[in-house]
Image (cartoon, rainbow, N blue to C red; front, side, top):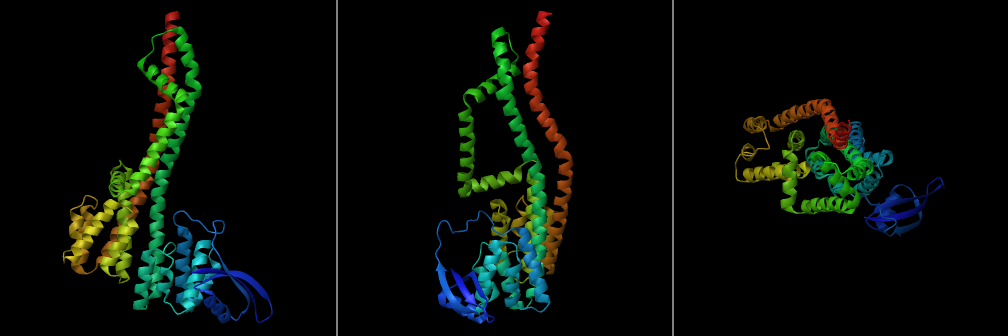
Length: 402
């Protein structure tokens, strides 16, 4: 897609300027003429470093995408064509990346392409699950129902993700504050007492010597601490780029005390909800499993899903590889097996998703009530150790003087 800056005139004689996307200049002229506009000038915009839009991660916020799905379904239900609905939503959305993509999709629809084909050209905006379900909806003639299912899916997935994020945010923030407080004490407070203890040549307790050693290291060798942190961060990202390293990190994330279980439950809910939505939309099972593997974003869980796909290709049940993995509890595998036997796999998967989404919500609520006192005790213990390391020698000296 090329970008063009246009200068046009309406039937009423009003002149307008703006930008648009099109395959080439002739396609851009044709589209403007279809809108009843007289083209005065049309210049292709060359991408430069300064003009490029750079996005890190997903360029569209989930809230904007959910609203887009809901509004799209409402417009289709009201009898608005996909072409007109795309044009309306391109004007209404608050997300600039989504707006730009919808303008391109609208142009593609004007050229006679299917909606699924048009959105597939913007993979960073429209995930593969969205494209696959839309394609299935086009084939079945149920675009409205497909969009409703997509909106429900993204809403529930977003809610679950935010619940887990909220449970993890608090301990991380408090942890950083605790580290900052400890560094301040070791760098600004402890050195003042070190000089005093050295001048007295007193025998110091082990805890005091340990705290003084750490304080001296931070004071004199601070650059080594910074280099160590940088090295650990670089090592993490380098390991993340390798298959074995990424697998090990994902495995460790699932094995963390308390939070690993929470993450595991969230992924089971996400996998079940995704597979249920795809299956209900008549997306082929093998294609659905490939999408689910991409959606969960964890190589341990993704490996099990991949083996389930291999099992299906060989004519075996989907649930067989799941039963052999520690990731999926018996409740999940038994309900999937029942769904396969009764032909109601989408219903069973939806029930699994409902159960684990509720479980995640309850677990997060319990964690919030437990984490705060535990973190306060931890912080008090660390600060208390430093204070004790300072006060113990002073009490000893006072007793000797007395």
